[in-house]
Image 1: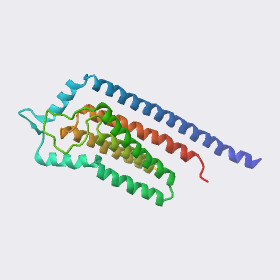
Image 2: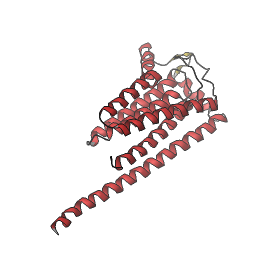
Image 3: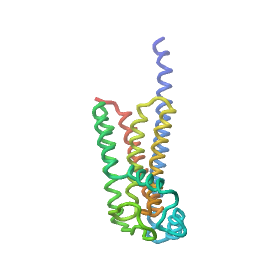
Image 4: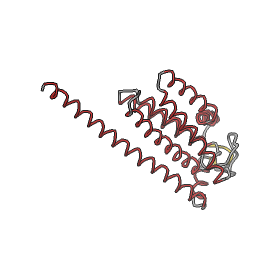
Amino acid sequence: MPGRFATRPLIARARVLAARQESRALAVLLAGAGSLWAFLTLADEVTEGETDAADRWLLLALRNPADPADPLGPRWFEEAMRDVTALGGFTLLTFTVVVATLLLIFHDRRREALVFAATVILAQVSSELTKALFDRDRPALVAHGGYVYSQSFPSGHSTMAAVTFFTLATVVASVEARKRTKALIYGLAVVFVVLVGVSRVYLGVHWPTDVAGGWALGAAWAMAAWLVLGFIRVRPRR
């Protein structure tokens, strides 16, 4: 009898935690669906040319009115934006994904490593496919402040920065018990993603809607990864 009564608080606590997990999963599922819907809606408006006026205005707002080839701000700031945009570049993100995946494997978190790497790869494939599908030209209003090799919509830098940093933040935050540290991890991920996207517009290599589309697509993949990671944490290891 005493043992039975002693286990009741543990059972109640387990039920509360399960309910919280289900609520979070539902919220993330809805947010992921909303991100995907936002991407598809934005893609439709871009295809029909409904965003052209806003894109032009926002792009030129970051330029010297007397010389559109000159971004606002001093020279050092322009160089800083080039450094920031590299955070979403293929080389740096590939290095980040490889190192993070290896560290997860070394710490016996192979399932998390698989989910993380697979999500980033699938996001990269989806970004390239959608670029080819919509075949949008890069901005020609201003001189590009960086090298470009592909179509414009969605922004590959924005897509890959979102999926990489948000998914990595989810994995890292899962092993951290303190809420403040979790908030810091997610906060840094948001800052990196936003800065990468803004830098693409500032350098004139993407329209603002390219960046918004990339954020939405990358966030959708990251939230899908969150759901999978939540499932494998609940499922017991052999």
